[in-house]
Amino acid sequence: MISKNPVFRPEKSQFTENEPCFVNPIGENESPDPFVTYDPKLGRYYLLFTRGREVRIFYAERLSDLRKDENSVKVYDTLQGDGINGCIWAPEMHKFGDRWYIYTSGARTPDGREDRTLFILQSNTEDPLEGFTFAGYPDPGLHAIDPTVFTHSDGCIYMCYAREGGGNRIHIRRMNSPTTFDGEGVLLCEAELSWEKVPPYVGDSTIIEGPFFVQSPDRKRLFVLYSANGCWSDDYAFGVLEHLGGDLLCRENWEKDSDVLMKKGNGTYGPGHASFFYAPNGKDLYIAYHSMHESNKTVTWAPRFLHVQRVYFDETGYPYIGEPVEMGKPMKEPT
Image (cartoon, rainbow, N blue to C red):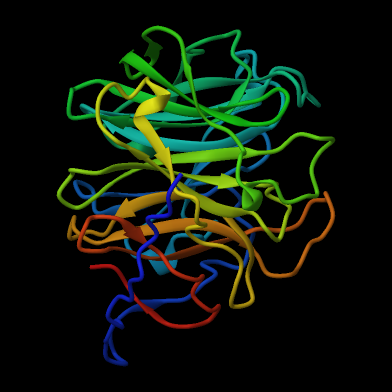
């Protein structure tokens, strides 16, 4: 595990006072485990996040307007009778063909924490605001959270998720369709480094979760960015795995960077559980993550808010995020 975190400083974004901008946090209400994507066909941003026992899609043409309750549609809740009866965690929405798929997890019992399983929703049309249908459990016996998917250059879809039990650990698994698995999952990452094992814990269990696939601009380098420590912790932070080539389902073909990619700073605590999305130009990459605005030293609930900032790459294609951007600092609206 050799550090590859580059010494890199992107050019400062220059924009005039009259240009559209946004500031962190986006919206005044909490948005834990945020997923953001941009739909170039319909010209909308979509936002999903952990929201109790429902899945709701927020939408807007501008990033700065994305967290407005009046611009949202509920597409699923636990009253549907599909076997999910407790809290739904960390939904993500990805498009395959002319349909959108929401990948998430939910508890089978109303107060369940030990029976969370993955499930999938499929959009009824190409417009995700027109509703979703329950598409099933890809593995009913799997106890896991935080699913995310990626289509590799080999044409196969791969899912990463955090498997629970004795601590959260990231697994990877091939799919033979957007809704079904092809074979078993493989352990990809667990807490090993000192910065990944900062208490407080729940019991003695360390936590590695919230994976997301990111490619370099030339698509020659593939990474999985993840979050370590508890989401309630000031020291929730981002790490990086890189695929070295060969079979994605072979753990030896992945290498972990020993450095933290981003951690607390500039008045924000516990930045983590990110998604990545491209601006409308299809070139500029952004990260959406949640962050606490006050220190929280205990294993207790704390509000987490939506933050967004630009992601850069060094000349080798390695990602650079830097420190969390200060709250209230204007940033240019993605174009």
